[in-house]
Image (cartoon, rainbow, N blue to C red; front, top):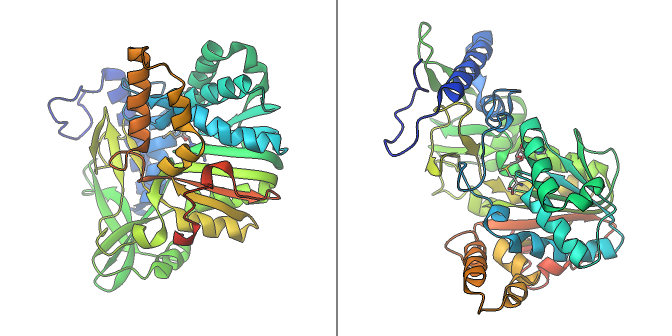
Length: 392
Ligand SMILES: C[S@@+](CC[C@H](N)C(=O)[O-])C[C@H]1O[C@@H](n2cnc3c(N)ncnc32)[C@H](O)[C@@H]1O
């Protein structure tokens, strides 16, 4: 059985037989959808590659996050991240937002750290719901919570869809970047949508192709007024999720953290190749057609588009800040200072993690936090000193 069709850099581990077989089955699935009309929009390809039941990247049981996986997220770096977020949540819980809904909870580390810190503050939520689209990830989350906060498990529920009515806080870290995005390009005076096809009718190899943009994709691309020879992404699914949250949220706050930019920075003329990125065993590259189902695919987030979607559904934008500003306002440095420096190993580890989260050269500037709300007056704790809503 041959490995997925990509020359892996030699220092990377080859996928094992089971992973290779799963990747081949997923490729067959992709080819069968291409067979319908010869063109699979990239947004559908990304959905299959990440979420096809039993086959997609997030559907498999293999570790994704952390040093043994493919990439690292903030909660996997240091528990200080969850503790700082908990400070913001504690303020909201005290103001009557009694339930928490976490979207896409990864390994369950953030939920564990948040519940630990809220318990320490004597400010536990009534319920902690986790909306997870991947059964494999949900299993992993349950194991982490069972190990970390077994006595609080009865407050945690896994839900398959957004509740119809939410009174509380909805939280999502690095979820929107993992939502399927459409790829569009402005070439030769025409707006086209990028997709995937067979290299040739008698080949199983995949290749990029395009067709004139139409419908919602065309309307969204036209609104961007893209320069010539420009390829980028449209976040229609992420906007849809924010609108759905807006419809469901009766009272409370949506708090989203991710990497990305406001509109003018995202669609800057020099960012003419978009932001699509893939990760396999911590190796970052830009070929989503390789290693199908075995690697992460993500795009940066357009926070202005999210703010527009939130306003369309009647939510107020309560704050927008860099991750560094948000975490500092939530007291991450004060918490670090409570670790005695004499506990050298513990202190050094925590300080290195906090440094990674805050440094402008790492996650401090590229990652942002945005908050939307209904019936909640600001300013929220995390946006007291670094609010940049004017940039949206
Ligand atoms: C990059 S991981 C982030 C995990 C975690 N939040 C963290 O910070 O470690 C993305 C997660 O979002 C989940 N996800 C993607 N789309 C989702 C959606 N529409 N609703 C809820 N979860 C979703 C994926 O299954 C995955 O667990």
